[in-house]
Length: 74
Ligand SMILES: [Zn+2]
Image (cartoon, rainbow, N blue to C red; front, side, top):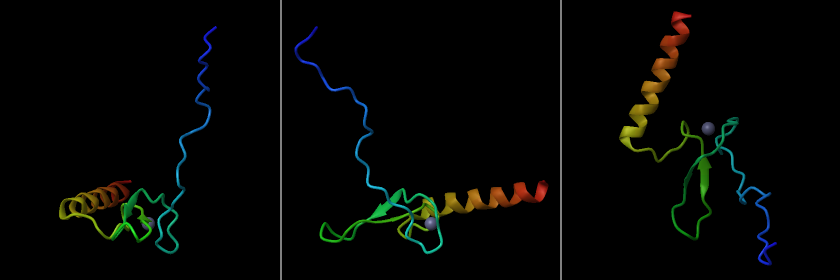
């Protein structure tokens, strides 16, 4: 028996629960943005995240278009 018994990691790491702040959207807000340390971070899902880069915007459009094509095929 060790006298340095580490507590078992039974609890998940503390996480702040935040969903997309877009009204009516129930997606997980995995994309945060804070203007400054004084401003609380705001969270959006990827689709509603207003600070996407051009490449991220393109990637999202391709994803949406692919999903639309798929629904047409079915
Ligand atoms: Zn959203």
